[in-house]
Image (cartoon, rainbow, N blue to C red):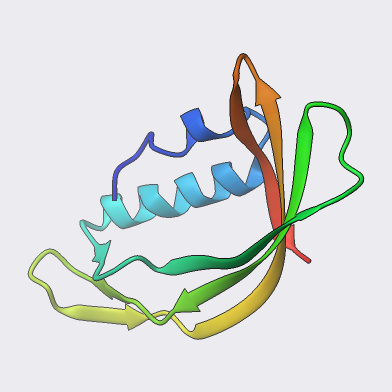
Length: 105
């Protein structure tokens, strides 16, 4: 993992971004990493009702059961395999789409 990847993709008030950046910091502090992408976003579909300059989407967050490994490759902990519906909001800022937030639907 690498700190600083998420903040440029979201707006400053994106709590989802902040929470995930914290998780990345914890992995880095422990010199740990995932053995694969921990989640996949599938079934992305646009929703109506978003204000001007925003878009809403429904999707499924699929946590795939990735392992957290230490520096030597030792398996420390495995994520549960979970699929849950999520809602995603993006906002148009300075000519680009930025993540505004993501929550369980």
